[in-house]
Image: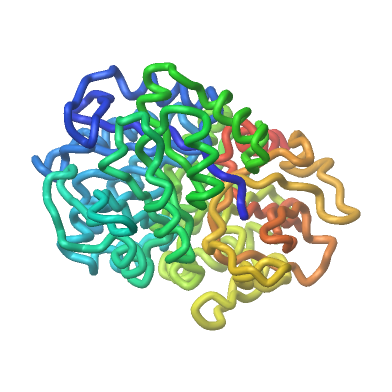
Amino acid sequence: MSNVRLIARLDIKGPNLIKGVQLEGLRVIGDPQEYARRYYEQGADELIYIDIVASLYGRSKLTEIVRRAAHDVFVPMTVGGGIRCVDDVRDLLRAGADKVAINTAAVRRPELVTEVSRRFGSQCMVLSIEAKQQAAGQWEVYTDCGRERTGLDAVAWAKRGVELGAGEILVTSIDREGSRKGFDVALTQAVSMAVPVPIIASGGYGAPQHLLDVVQQGRADAVAFADALHYGRTTVPELRRLAIAAGINVRTV
Amino acid sequence: MQVTVVDYGIGNLHSVARALERCGAEVLLSTNPGQIEVAQSLVLPGVGAFQDGMSGLREQGLIEPIRRYAASNRPMLAICLGMQMLASVSEEFGIHEGLGLIPGRVVPVPKLTTEGVPQKIPHIGWSPIFPAESVSWQGTPLANVAPGASVYLVHSFHVVPQHDANRLAICRYGGHEITAAIRSGRITGCQFHPEKSGEVGLAVLRTFLAQ
């Protein structure tokens, strides 16, 4: 196994970094650039930007945000929200993104996953799955910022996504997002065991044990942290120390 | 320091350009064979599939200019797919000829660990790199990197040089030795992304520019 990646996730609405709870109840935190720079300097392994309302309203300042970030951030950046076609992907990559995360448009038109991976490589195509638990061991995929049900089973969709060309999967638990109750370990594990590509777990960090659980039981290859970092409840170096103390391999900085 | 970055319509050259600028370089993005041949210093970036990369170079008429540049003993840094294209041949989606600047083959990263357990492909993430056996980083772009420092890789294939002396750095994945950098004369190839490897990566670029 590779070193587990510790990722700072920045949810964006318009020009602002925001915090969501279950992808709703948005609250403005500040200028994303300031936070991105801070996380880079703290040694985050990657940044993820998600414009969480872009798929609803179809407009996005993300390209501009990414272009600014690329001047100060020299670790990989994954960018998602409102991506509808190969040209959208090209624009984001030209602005400085390394990978794109696609949820809604991939559900509506699964061939997009194939188009993006053929054109830019599967390493660039992150399938973003936002899921809610329906029953024990069963999760449904949602789109449009957690508003629309799809009827798709999250694990089956992950497998399909990899067949279509996704090189990585970002799994966000809508139930846990912003809850501080811990990641959805069962969801993460179910997806991780089902596909041969790396999994990023997102949504729910509140306490050190949550990181250990989602890696050791959930088999996450990477873990995303959002408001815990934004509000300074933890820092990237502290997360790194926690991981090392628990015997989890992470990058040494 | 002026550095010419080969633009052949693929991938992340803007990230590479910005990282080089951060290291003090004046960057010229170029698709022009003439400009590439007379460059003082050349960077060949790239992400994506081998065949697409070579087609991109071919369509722009850049293969021979890059070969002539390389033959002139000027500094060249090839990154990720760019590094793989330095090799003679690739096994990605069929057999494809590369630039042939450093003899070797591009082969898949093993899908099983040395213990026979399936492992995640692509290999994505930060790995410590070390000098290959009986090779020194002195005088190379890695001269200011501490052995064991971590760099960012994302790849499903890697280069196996024909001559061990061309293997500059290795990392490990699933117990296997994976080629992290190759070198011949003043040509260096990095499988990792120096432009995305934080301060370690910027040190590689700064050292390259200073050589």
